[in-house]
Image (spheres, rainbow, N blue to C red):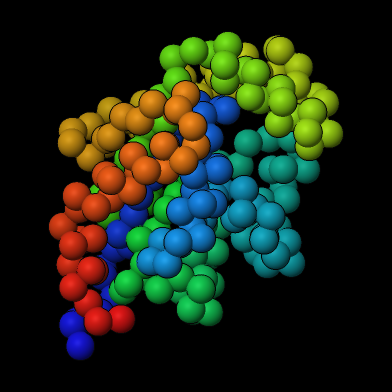
Length: 211
């Protein structure tokens, strides 16, 4: 059997894109394929145990409507991913970690450097903000989140993405960043992501393993 020892850092794929670009959809689909484990930032907060010290710290900020600080967010993420490793949901020796929504900004990316080895950043690019806004309104109405269909709310989400999250592309600049046309059909977007994954040496090594 080939060596399947746990890597020092989690082999990680980031899915990055503006609101409405489909990163959550792609993350979930990838996560359903063997050897990929998907974790979205929302999953971290939803599974939070508010009885713990860290959980109480989260409540302090969220109850005031404040953004959770980057260091607390990353600590919550570490606690969540460790639980997934301990329970064998995520097997870092044979799985790729797929993240969306975290890191949310460059500061979080820096804090997570010791935990993750970012192999590829799939940038779901759609310059047509009108199309992204249409998708967001459609999703908000489908989920009965009528406030999220408000034009001012949508534009604010775009502005936050441009100011805080998009600079992550520069942080990981180089051939790790793979631009993908997010206006394509979701199946074609997935095809392009998988094609990028299969160029990785880490993927080729994994294919050789007798798992």
